[in-house]
Length: 276
Image 1: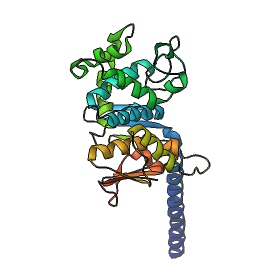
Image 2: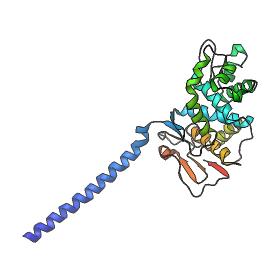
Image 3: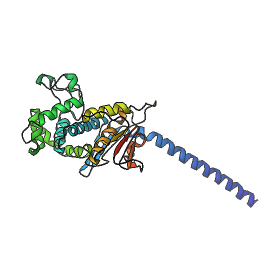
Image 4: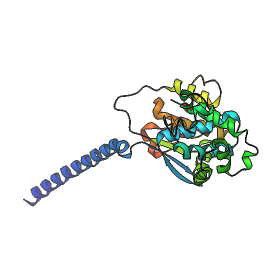
């Protein structure tokens, strides 16, 4: 009788263990599936100087401002000036409205000769116009950031730009590529599979950098800084163009695990940024 009881107990215990394991892995699977939805969509910028949270559109604008500066061969200081201006004027958003006839990232006014409304709603065009005005400011690299910004914008209160200087320095270090692995984004997977538009992504990247689009998803990175600028731009624009992964310099970002940031990838190289 005791032996039968022991066997029955053992059998029940075995069933309970199996069910427990099944429930554990079932819950684990569901939590992993729900994680992207719970986390929403966002980007994080992390450098030794600090960490910033951005909306994905803000990250796209920030990446564009850095890329256009790279095209013009401008120093990081110019990028910082661009950021203090864009944060104050639009919170790094491509606004279709503003004070009087102001529009876009830098809230430039068509009536003041900056361009048409349509042109100024193009962040690449708007950024080029901003830098064209900035480089005409005498000794702009030596001026405090807010003074250089005010010399371009001629705002009613130029001192307002000063409050964004620390954030601007963090963004510039990340999006210019000076700090590796500084930018990662995450967002829920679309309900229906979206084909990768890597050709469009390469075309837009080439437009911001002032060069012909890369012919394939392997984009040349002549320097580490250039490589990380391209990688950060690609991650920021991944949702827009349906990119699934970005690989560079021994690490990889994936759209399915974007919140985890850059993970080790032995197959990626330091000479090319791969997007797909």
